[in-house]
Image 1 (cartoon, rainbow, N blue to C red):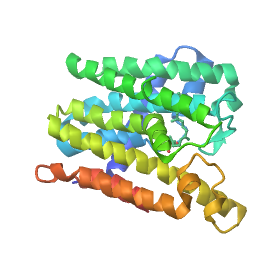
Image 2 (cartoon, helix red, strand yellow):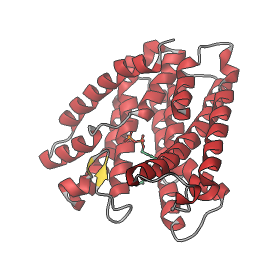
Image 3 (cartoon, rainbow, N blue to C red):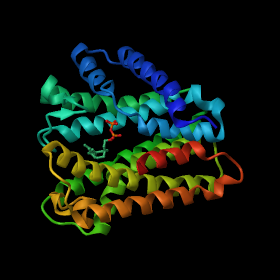
Image 4 (tube, rainbow, N blue to C red):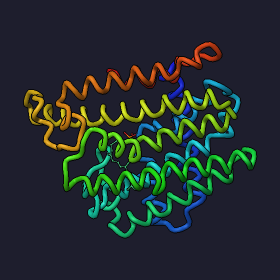
Length: 292
Ligand code: GRG
């Protein structure tokens, strides 16, 4: 099985080319096109599309070329969520991936419209891609459920409300499962759908996705604490995790690190039913990266 670094080196540029070309073709208004392209091409890690493509690589690699637009569609949804999350009415952030946020560069109205444009464009790309119609209906459904008011938007709403109170660990987990986990899960399940995997294999990937999504969020919370401490030139203390509604905030830094290991172990175990029939090393490598 190909290593994750080589897999990325091959497919991230292919995905980036496709995203840039299709945005140029499909967005008619120049400023809107600039704003949408600016955020999509700002150097994200492309985690979610890579997860979809990793499922294809694991089970049926010949489906990768025709599935690139479906993978790209997920990145459009992810980018919209970041643009809107950064808005003054939400997190009010000036910087994203080291550069000005959309509303700082293009103004608030254009940033809202860039996000608005990215959402339906994702479903346009999905429904246009070269896959069988019944599969495409399932893909549209999975992405809508993951990104919509059942999950991502609900998680964002709960997050905004939760700022007023301290959440329990169970509430925090549920919030993150919706806000960030569900799109990660949709990416893996979209891969399973394209490969038409059976129920048992799909369930294993779904379980892997749940734990991977949580591990991703816990790691993000931990990095927030450790990088802030590093920027301030201070040692990291458990009580430095100022934001209460984070894993380090609720569990302390060591507790959050334990929780990360627990989720990574569970994610790896979720792949066990697949080991006899396929090489799971590419999927397992996503976990190794989060452990380091
Ligand atoms: C506005 C409806 C709506 C939803 C926003 C996902 C989300 C919901 C907000 C993002 C808030 C945030 C920064 C959460 C931390 C985890 C996370 C999703 C980080 C960003 O994802 P990466 O690391 O980003 O995959 P890149 O830049 O690599 O694409």
